Each structure stands twice: as C-alpha cells, then as structure tokens.
Image (cartoon, rainbow, N blue to C red; front, side, top):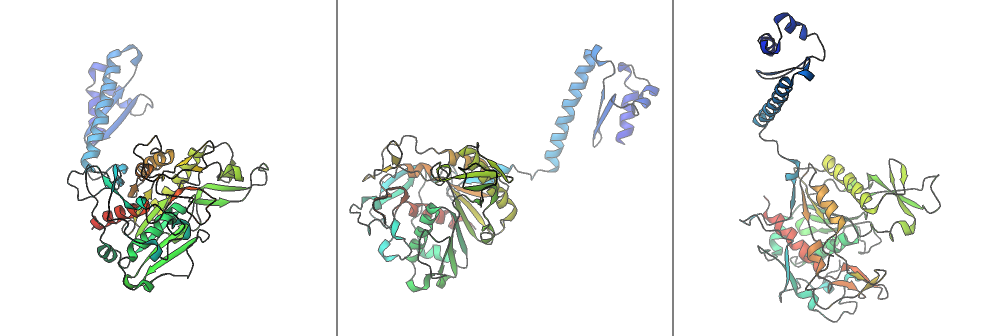
Length: 432
C-alpha cells in the first residue's frame, strides 16, 4: 500500500517535472528517490537537479521534518510506558513527605539530649579503633548531635519495628573501612532491641578487625545477617605486567570487578561505598597503577580511573542484581578533615563547624551521582558528603588504638554513621 501511494505521489508530481515513465524508473535508480514509510504516511525526496531548484530543497527539508515528527509522535503513541533511564536514580528522601521536595541530606546538625542511642562499651562489635571514649576521649558533646533536614523530619528510631522489618533478610555492605564504620554502627543500633545479646554473633567467630576481608553478624532471634565485604576499590587487583617500569609494583584492573562479587548477589539490601583509597598516597606512591584491557595505563588521572571503576560496578549491577529482591544503595564520599601542608594533620574540634569551606564538595561524589543517573537498575544515593563536612568534632583523631596515628577520616562510635543508618532504616520502612 505504501508503495502504491508512493507511486501515486510520484505520478502526481507534475510540478517537479516528473511523468509516469520517469516515476517508474525512479524506483530502480539508486540515489534519486528515498521513500520513508510510516503506516500510510509516505515522504518522497526528489532531488534531481536540486542544486538549481531552491524550491525543491525547501520541499525536501520540510518533508524530512514532517517525517521525523510523525515518527516521534508515532513512537510516543505506541510506547507510552517507556521512561527515561534517569528515573531509576534518586537521592534518599522520605517517600511519605507530601511536598516530595525534601532531601534527607540537605539540612543541619542540632543538639539533642536523647543521643547517643547506644553505649559502645556494651556493643562487642565496635572495633577498638572506633571506640573513642574507651580510648581516652574525655569530651562527650560530639555524641549529642542529630541531623535535621531542612524541609522534613527523620522519624525517631524504633528498633523493634526495624528488627521486624529485617526479619529473614540479608544486608550486605561492600567497600572500605568507612563502610565497616557504618556496618558496626548498624549492628550496635539493632542490638539495643535484642534481649538475648548472645543471640547476636559473628558467624565464623572472628573478632571485628580491619584485617579480615569478610565479616558476618547474625541476629539469630530474627533470622537475618548483616555482612561486610572489604573491597576498597571495588575492582580487581592485578599483577605487574612484564614490560612495566620499575615503579609499578601492583595494578588495579579498572574493567574487572572484584572477584568476590558473586558473594554480594543474593542480598536484600546492598550498600556500596568507595573513595578514601583513591589517593596518590594509597596508589602511586606505593607502586599501584591502573590496567584496562590487560594494558597498563600510567597516564590516567585519579578521577578518570574512579569513573571507569564505577562504570564497571554499574555494568555488573545492571546484569547481576536481582531487581525484584535487592535494594541497592550507594554512599558518596565522606568528608574528611585533614589539615596542614601535607594534609596529614588532624585537629578535632569540640563542636561541629558552623561554616564549611568547600569540603562539602567532592569530585568522587559528583562522578558517582552522574554515573548512577544512567544506570538501568534503581540505585538510591546516600549523599553524605555535605552533612559530614560539618562534623570535624566527630572524627577518631588521636583516640584510636594507635594514639600516635591521627585519624581524620573515620568516625567515633557512637557517632555520625548512626545517623546514616537512621535515615536508611526510615527509607526502608517506608517501602512496601
């Protein structure tokens, strides 16, 4: 039918100087006529001698525009349910908020006498390096701050409700020691609602330490586990290529996800975080460089390498995560408060900062936010970078297991990670 209509149009194209015999020959003359059919719509482009016919050029361009618009409207009509990929991305926010404008991570810290929510000395899953009071810290005001979003409230933590919600679930943290910081916080928060503390235990009998790559704490009474997998870069380590310069000792394969990724798949809540090991001191100065496709990439920038690693992670998530079961979260870079010429000095304040000077911005957080927007699997972003920028008072500082080693990256427990978990639980409880 489209062919017949096209032939009819060609025959009737008298104004263009085309007779019937010429029209018939056009169908076998490549390069003279292009016919685009969409249903009964047919556009004929005739450009014989079009360099000398401006009117024909106008007709051709107009016909092309009409055809493109028709195809677009037709696609919208036929496929109304197709949505942009970006809609799978969102900043963690309270779904019950009627204005839908509230972002959990835009707000301020307020002093609250109801905090802290647990005693670290009564939680056996806080490693010594994060237990600041046990390590000699005297001031306690840093324990009393609660995050208040600008346009909404975070519901008070109800441990019994959360425990029931998590019954039979598997929660998995993947990342560096900041992920372990949050993992320990979550366990301690939930233990406050468990009567028999002995029913909460590490499944392999491991002591909580930074040296163990896999840790899993089981809440026997509620039949769920909270697990931690240490994967500081998320991507696979590699060996030194034979032709590599002497300065190269090890590599990170930016196009291969960590080989323990198969352990993360069958989870109900999956929380990723990486960023603090992406520094020259942790990489180049120790002989660690990047590989892509088995080839050494000496000139690649840190930001470009981070972007490639996250792209590898995103591709894995799209292919492997079970969408009908697993909720995926990505926590952005946590603001550190190093100072001094070499950025190795740590001055812990007694109260949160009233003003922040740029540390609420992180190129890693921006890269993560932009990349996650284009994933085809729903990922909820925990944008903790701005809220942590104020908390120069809450770092471990010199109150770690090694007082001579300053720590302006990790957080004392109880502390800032408790608030991340409160917001996470509030979000999960609101989901059906």
